[in-house]
Amino acid sequence: MNPRITTPIALLSLGVAAPLLLAGCTSKEGTDDAIAVTSTNDACDLASSEAQTGNVNFAVTNNGSKVTEFYVYGNNNRVLGEVENIGPGLSGNLTVDVTDPGTYTVACKPGMVGTGIRKEITVTGEKKAKEEVPADVNAAKARYLDYVRGQVNGLAAQTQIFVDHVNAGELDQARAMFGQVRTFYERIEPVAESFPDLDPAVDMRWDDTEDGQQPFTGFHRVERGLWPPQPAEVGEAPGQIAPADAANAKAQDNEAAIKQAANDLLANVNKLKTEVDKPDFTFETSQFVQGPQALIDEIAATKVGGEEDRYSHTDLWDFAANVDGAETLIAEMQPMISAKDPALMDKITAQFADVRTAINQYRDGDGYVTYTQVTEAQRKELSNKIDALSASLSQVPGLVLG
Image 1 (tube, rainbow, N blue to C red):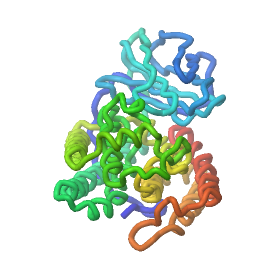
Image 2 (cartoon, rainbow, N blue to C red):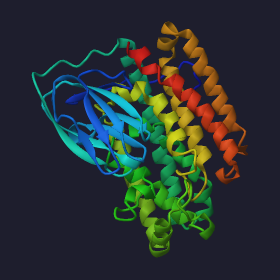
Image 3 (cartoon, one colour):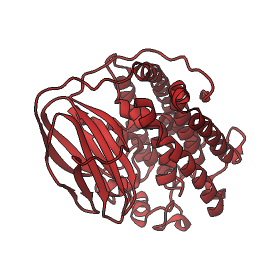
Image 4 (cartoon, one colour):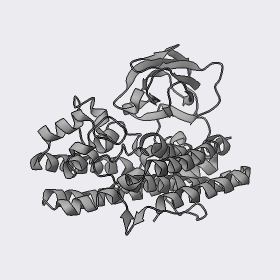
């Protein structure tokens, strides 16, 4: 059960690794020394590929026609800083606290799919101490880590049951629990996304396969096998199944392939559990303070059109899980927000209630109605409420770390 904002949460301790590069907060105001990044549909141009240790600022402009993202990677391809959902013609800012000199990888992701267009930057200068994070923020992160581990444990257990049903040919049972089993993953997506290899292996969409050039794996690969594409669902509009996707399904999907995809999914979920359970596992402070908005923006930017669960139309499960995860993060930061801006905390609380009410109107028994029953006007109304909440949540990182 997800704790609500007004309910204190009891969580456990955090082990700390020593990443070479530590992310600060994104969405800061631009700075004069920022490295200008221009993202287009087929390029990621940096005004400079050199930086000094300390805070490194990026000013990302999207001159393409697709929504884009910008990432900074550290050791083992771990995501150390990111700014997401930059629409065409818009810009975003990212600040990363670089403590060690070295070579780092950055990437633009036009269309928010695949591994992106990657470049390297060289950081020189003396090794610097990690920028100090307020003690109450570190304590909240430590408690939140236990929530993350609990969700991953639940994910592993439920995925095992789900995959057992697939292997036994009990496909109705597998279909019945598809939305529910994904809930655990959707609640902790900002942390799960810090594993750039495991995250796509578990949660990639067909769009990430470059029209089938890359292997299609994870939940949505199994979903497609459980709900084979129907001719009326094929098209290029948001929420539809691309013609190439439907053709691939017709050629590739069979009983053996779906079982293999399910077993691969389970293996990757268990790998995620192993990584998160390590005593020295940690995640960036930026992922913690920006997590609430990132989860809410997931709905607004890439899900409200029905893109996520395009075969099963179980999208409302994902929306509710994203709200669960965002609300849990805000619950951890509530004392810090209330101390500095009680009016903002009250506004966020009311907006969460508004969004949750909007989603709950589609409850059906223990689950939700199929997303195809939600009209375009109703989707727009839900999107507007989510956008309003996102605007309030965008103020949280600066407030908590300020």
